[in-house]
Image (cartoon, rainbow, N blue to C red; front, side, top):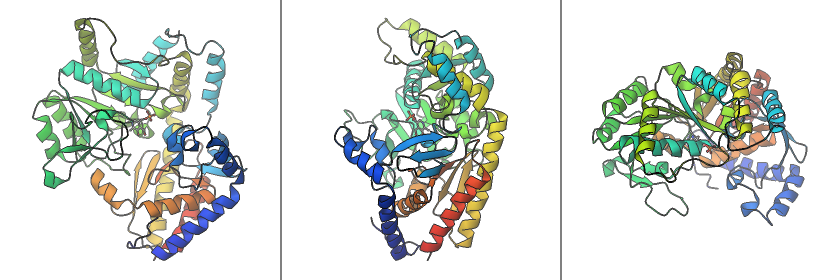
Amino acid sequence: MNYARRPGIDSTALSRLAAREHDSFVATHRESARLAQASAAHWLNGVPMHWMRDWSTPHPLFVRRARGVEVEDVDGNSYVDFCFGDTGSMFGHSPPAIVRALAEAGADGITAMLPAARVARVGEKLAGVFGLPFWQVTQTATDANRAALRWARAITGRARTLVFDGCYHGTVDETMVRALPDEHKGGTRPRAGLIGVSHDVSAATDAVPFNNVLALEKVLARGRTAAVIAEPVMTNIGMVLPEAGFLRSLRELTRRHGTLLIIDETHTLSSARGGYCSRADLQPDIWVCGKAIAGGMPCAVFGFTTEVEAGMRRVQQERAGGHSGMGTTLSANALALACLEASIDELMTPANYQAMHDTAAYLSEGLGRVFSAEALPWHVARVGARLEFGFGKPPLNGAESERAAWPELEHAIHLYLLNRGVLLTPFHNMMLCSPVTTTAHADRLLTALHDCLREVAA
Ligand SMILES: Cc1ncc(COP(=O)(O)O)c(C=O)c1O
């Protein structure tokens, strides 16, 4: 680790703290260490999915069980979870409604590649809550975004995609790009670190800075963009909030230039029942959501307008048959549909959102107080139940947010908190409040974070 000097933080104290927390983790996670060693024999990087190595821990943390707000590891340590599987379990671990749906529907057939009896009813509920008349189901948000982009290209007869610099919409090739700095006058390049790509993923994508209407319009005016895919609040490069009027301009400009607007609410489902779009009266052509939409069961949805549905039917009629290149065998299986319905009925309730937002607001204010007390010029951003703190003023776009990131400090804070029974999302400083997260849980995070910062603040 590079504990370079930065304002507000004592780099010597930081490196001392990081070393101590490393040793403390090792001393209290012997069984996880044993399992990590045993797992290395048969799993790449010792884990069944390589992101499980992205935590700040010296070796993977093995979980015995997770319920409600709590995660318990194989050494018997328990944690208050503010990560919730990076959003999949945003409504709490194993919510009773989902456990019931799994038991009941699971007993009647898990997957038959035929529509379950509840499908008409679930479609009506999706339309009622999210305001779009037509729907499709996939296994993951990545799949939903891939399908949405393919449909958009087919419907518009255009090849290009526009994304905001620093976005993440799943492992969708055409979105794995970054904008070149201003001196290159626009321009887009593949994201660093991609493995095994067979083509230039930036060839048909333009990346422009979030909150920059001029850059957006410049690209859209060329008339070659099939779709803009965007989160209404950027949540994958720290958190970047939209400036007043930006989303309205995005909607107006996409309409004016014949470009479809795909809004990806996989993370901003934290905003409200119906998502950010319902709260902000933003009307996308295609709306995507995965992760928590079915209470953490693998399931994602995309909804679309009557016009988009007509375009899809036209495209289907015009083609000569064969495989569409979209869909997967397990998508919309009976079990996923049962969990989706339980989630709409019993998780995404106004009362649950109220509880999540009240706790998140409490946590947000508490974080502000901790940073003021330590004279740190940091900020907190919040979109409903989802919060993020950043090391500087609120960023305007992905590049600004990235410049403020501080991996060594994040690593040390995450490990310090984990050693005191608090889990943050391993990526930047993201926290979620579930309906079962209380102000007492928030206080635990605030106390531990304050203790940590007292030790490293200059
Ligand atoms: C906004 C957004 N969209 C899509 C995805 C992809 O979700 P999944 O990995 O479940 O396919 C993510 C994952 O973090 C995301 O943050």
